[in-house]
Image (cartoon, rainbow, N blue to C red):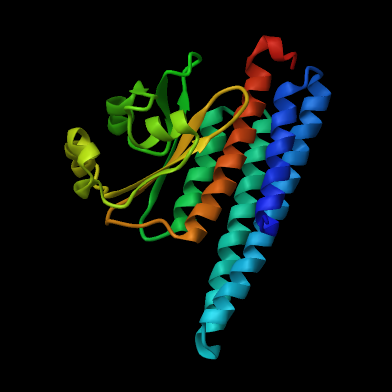
Amino acid sequence: MHTPQKTLRLHAEECLRRAGLATDPLIRLDFLNLASHWLDLAATSQEMETWRERLGRSNRISSGKVLQETLFKFQAWRRCQAKALKFTMLGARLDVALGVLTRTASEFIGDGARTAFYIADSAGTTLHHVVGMPAAYAEAVDGFKIGADSLACGLATHTGKAVLTADVAADARWEPWRRMADKFDYRGCWSFPIIASVRRGSFAVYSSDPRTASSADLEFAELVTLTAAILITQHACRATPQWGC
């Protein structure tokens, strides 16, 4: 049985899927707006569930502070999500809208995490940095292959499943890329697929120290990737003539 948060995210995914199938631009926009509302409800539900979990683990002295920090994080995320969606509706570039998400997502995950978005080319064979990491890194990884023999974002985009590397220094598959990881100061690397009907992509989280993703991290990443999928679909709606927008 799905959790309430998962059920709400599934509703958002279904609206996003239907938006991709719609031929009428107004109907497509309605589905995208519905997907956004379901995501907002999912974030609210996740916020309340986190409160309950943390109250159960915290003592009376610390619980107030824990709840306040959690509340601020979720409120910041919901404001960020609404801002990014509004920017896209007003015609902002994709990197601008996704850039709004990277800043808040990094703060939400915490401990100095950095986040970035990558999008596949039209053929769906290579990934290209959109926003989040320094220009030198973006140039170095531009055209990263998507496929079963890839790793991190390339593999996550290919399989549609998260690829979570707690420590790149301890993973043999990372040997060719360890110098790059050292240069840009990250040890943990999590890659989450973005599944949009018009273009695939990935959301990456980089941490300077080895780090294992918690269940809360995974839940939050689902909110991020679904939001990104909506932004990508809206952007394609404007940019692609055959979408009729």
